[in-house]
Amino acid sequence: MITCSAIVTLLSSWFYNLNLNFFPVQTLQYLKGDLEECEKEPRYCGLITTINEITPQGSRLFTYALIRYWLRPDLIQCALTSSEKDAFLDLETSEQRWSFIYGRGFQWVPIFNTGNRMEILVMEDLDHIPEWLSVSWIDDRHNLLLRIDSRDNIRQPGVGCGPDALTSWSLFDRSEMLIPQ
Image 1 (tube, one colour):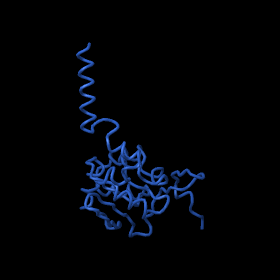
Image 2 (spheres, helix red, strand yellow):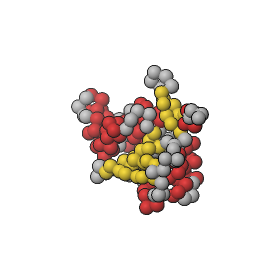
Image 3 (cartoon, rainbow, N blue to C red):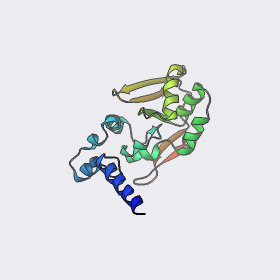
Image 4 (cartoon, rainbow, N blue to C red):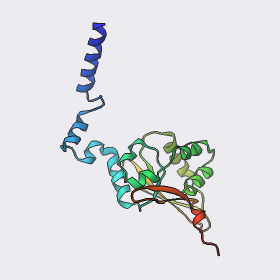
């Protein structure tokens, strides 16, 4: 029993000294105010900062990345849901995936190069953008931010995101907002 405790203690010390434990040195420095926000995770911070600065309130981001906690509260609440993620991953063609992304109201697609399956599919689908869709991007040398717009006035997103309380945002069906003519 003593041998097991000694091994656990040695491994814990080793992980701590190699900065591999739950409270790495960077986190402690950040909490003490000795480390700026972007110094904690510089690989993603530039794109996250850009997203927070340029996207209008209530924008939908097509991302399920764990680093989304750096986003503005409205962007987090309007981001991809787990059921949308599952539905997207079940689609078989580029046309289906682009129609899904735009139809669900995602105008922004950050690619953080984390290697997740969704990002890989979107990157592959960049070679097969439908004629009705316009895709532009911002490249920060580490990551991409895609902006998606329809070239077809008839094709409009079916889902939006808006405030439902003082500090809360939720998804809504855009067709319910249409005024009958």
